[in-house]
Image (cartoon, rainbow, N blue to C red; front, side, top):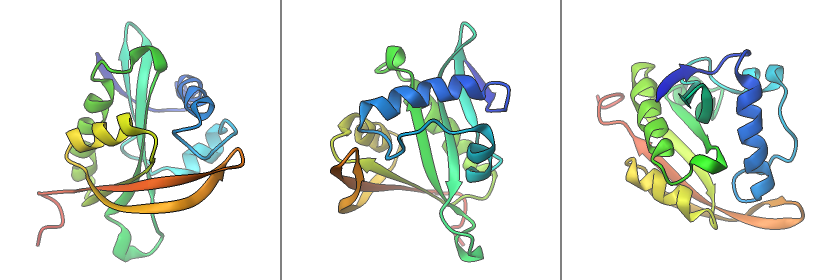
Length: 163
């Protein structure tokens, strides 16, 4: 397997995986596929990570800022998605571990995720990678007219922001 950065060139592969997640109704509130310009603007320009096997993108992860306030410059929100045919094969774990490594190299001290409560596979994946549950948001938003609850999880770096 090979780790590659996400660029405009491989963005169509990312969109294909994201489309599967939109259709699942348990991974994102979004219903429309993003355009490169919007996705690019909404994500930090580092930690844009994809994983390939046999020239096929199997998954991706990226970070979004949680706030424009300088005090939160080391806090970012995680997106992580794996193609349906590769789930349960450790792809998500490889992606999250690489994300943690790269995020710490870029002075990120907290990674946070909001995960639909019914998406227990994602909760378990995050726990396996050192995230902990820090909260629960009841009926935080609607997906196709159905209220969704979010489990809030975070990873606190042990090497960045420890002073």
